[in-house]
Length: 194
Image: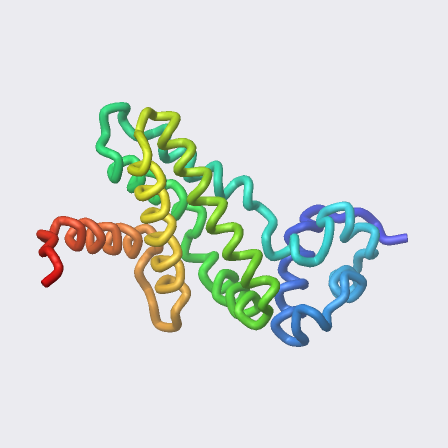
């Protein structure tokens, strides 16, 4: 019988990611993941419902960070300032030491269409959650949905840039730059079609 050791969830996550990257997501079993860190498959299932959850664990914390950022914004803040506050809070979950893990995780996701679909669904859920929180602040439609979808787009683009090889800026800084770019784009005068 394997003796209980602290940090099993983190060890399982790290081992799973390494195995997925080396052998492929579909080719890696939960038993292999558990055995690679000296645990049983039963222990694996105490922490994760299936091997996909290893890659997507913590989604509630991710969403909550954005909601906390919305709550932290002053009650009279303009809509996009509220979105900026949400982005700042969300990006705080990704410190520099997490960048190598995030890069490897994205490589595994990009190699598997079902995982890509799950990631897309996760980001869609983010926009839905943020839009609902904006509506609860009294921001009407379609403004709430436009702002939430824009914030989601900024986060996705910033994250993709953050995990690129050679990128050294903090995720929060990239998101801030992209949000400023979005502001500049929307501030341009719209010319009627010719």
